[in-house]
Amino acid sequence: MGGDDMGACGGDALDLADFLGDEVVQIGYGEAGGRLVELQVGDDVVVAEHGVHAFDVGFATDDFGYPSFGSPPAADKHISSYDHGRPPVRLGNSAPSIAAALPMGKSVGRWGGPPVQWPLMDKVRVRFAPSPTGYLHVGGARTALFNWLFARHHGGTFILRIEDTDRTRSTEEAIEQIIASLRWLGLDWDEFYRQTDRFSVHRAVAQELLRRGAAYEHEGAVWFRVPKEGTTVVPDLLAGDVRFQHRELKDLVILRSDGTPTYNFACVVDDHDMGITHVIRGDEHLNNTPKQILIYQALGWPMPLFAHIPLILGPDRSKLSKRHGAVSVLEYEKNGILPEALVNFLARLGWSHGDQEVFSREELIAYFDLPDVGQSASVFDETKLLWLNHAWMKRKSPEELAGLLRKYLVETGVATPEQVAALGEAKLVQAAELLRDRSRTLVDMAHAARFLFPGEVPIPPEGEELLRAELSPAFEALARRMEQLSDSSPAAMESAVREVLASLGRPLKDVALPMRVVVTGSRVGPSLFEVLALAGPELVAFRLRRAADKLQKGSP
Image 1 (tube, rainbow, N blue to C red):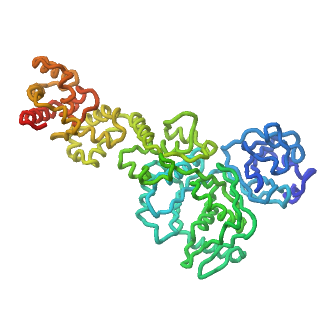
Image 2 (image 1 turned 180 degrees about the vertical axis):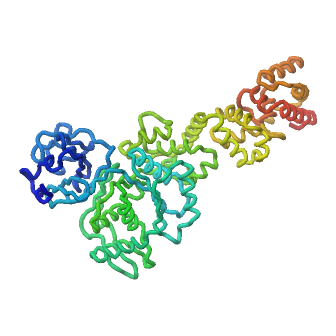
Image 3 (image 1 turned 90 degrees about the vertical axis):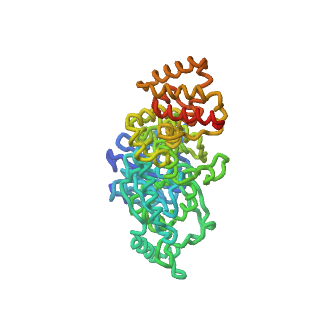
């Protein structure tokens, strides 16, 4: 039975099972419903996404509000759950209508209109399409992550497309920074494009729109003609149907007078040519979408599915800005944030999986899907980011953390590469394991490790008030004892310190904190004797003696 036999309701024309055999196909509602369904014909089971508006297409509903296919097309079949593992196809035909998506080249009729042809999308294809007019920030990084996770979850393709059509503002430096940021986050791409390499394609499509009468030339530019009357519905997977009156839209330039395409036009052409199935982006782009849909319709092209992610807000609920922490992605690396922590943090900005907070990359890929993305704006919470970073530092092996610590010791100016090398790998691993419990970032850890390197450590004001002249004899005696030690284990350090203080008649509690300040430059930290052991007797003796001399002369 051919597609032409199925254009009318009733009779054998609606026996899709006979027509399709055991194939699994997808059908999509048009303007009125704006929801997606999947139809498995072999055993007459119909599956649909929750929220299908059956009444919009003239079907009766069951007790749960799902379509009850009485007649047409099949008897007593009800909607059950929707399998998000297969990308749905949305048809943009006038409602009420339903069409079946078949392998390329097959067609099936829709109720209320002629047969339509539609490719079956058997693989997700998504893109992250940044404009290289500045560095990649938190919002863009989250958009990239959501697209990447969606592609990886569904076994699809993640495309990086640089939208550099604005040649006056786009820079190579920004492109390099975007690429470096994505690589640091571990968001690898399967295909890479630059819009400037496709200008000839964009111009050809603009000429086609001119030929169709959907565009016109004015002052050297090509303008798309927006219909004066009517409504365009943006079928959003997160927000539902969003309607835009054409009278609120204006004709738009699609090709500038210099021959370069504009964003809304190039975006449509490239998404179509690259077979994009889902456009997942920030909801600041929602107002662009009706314009893009009109271009799709003017060209007779199938549309991708749209999902507009809510904004990220600052803690005060205002738009996220630099004062809230909206710095470039690579700035987080510089500040000692682990890529695993930032990815984890960004994933939780608008998405959740139960009460779980810490996710490995494998878990994110396994759990992430669009139905779990919320519709409310997310709040950027730096405290939570630091908490996650600390959690991820604790998950690292001491050896892996030591490798990272080595880098930050040099980058923060705490030590030279030569000093780090002289410290030795074993001591660096010990330091990483000892210091991570009290370090929120790798920069924190690097500064906390300052006591491992030669010279004096700076004493903060809150530490100076602990250093009294009466401590000078104890410090001097402890320095002499340290110089005699052959065993520098924590146990040996503790025994030596207690022995000296007992001979002086001083309790440990009177000396322990000032001693920590002198050796490490901090009032807080790991176990005192583990710190002394890690610093080594020579450094400990040097700092205690210098402190004793200063206190004796009347300066801390």
